[in-house]
Image (tube, rainbow, N blue to C red):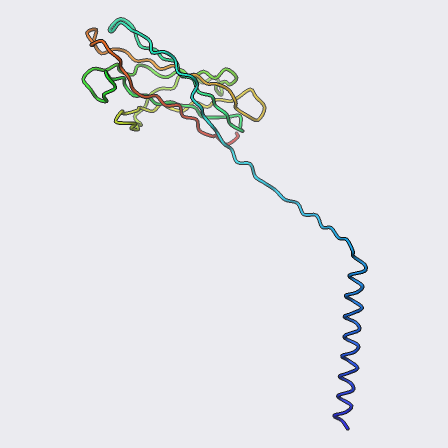
Amino acid sequence: MAGRIRSKVKKVISVIVGAVLVAGLSGVAFARDSMQLDRRVQVRVEPTVTIIELAPLPAPSIRPGKEDAVIEVGWQVDSNQEMLRIGAAASDLFKGGVPNGPYSLVRKGGVKIHCPLAGTIDGVSNVALFGPETASVNGFTLFHTNGILFESSQNNRFSMPCYLTFTWNSTSSELPTGQYSGYVRFIATLVPPL
């Protein structure tokens, strides 16, 4: 008898639980035939810089021992921030493009940096000076300059051509005629906002 009562109680409970579940599920289905939920998403845009070489200039002719070789090289610089640290590197120029050959034009002074829509911070000179740091490109030793902090007058960006003026002097007034060549480098480094 006790077993029958338990069995009936279980059946009643099962019917009640089933009815509650059906009622609950059917209530959700009928109450929400459309639903929406919004969520905020975010993307972080990282600072970036791109440099593209502008058209090369013709090679100047010089009289050795009487005048320096001066070459201005241009690069298009684009960044999504206003401040960049700009520097350069240059090798000596060697006859026939043979690195460390006996005939060369030697780097002289510093490198003048000109970006028309940007200026140096706190009136610092725009001439970067060569230091002891070096790199190598195709057998040529490049000597790096210090970097100079430039700030654009554009709003939240740095997008303009920049020109670097390099100077070499001759080691002798009796340098053989011919083409003398080497490498120069433009260096732009991102700077966190001040």
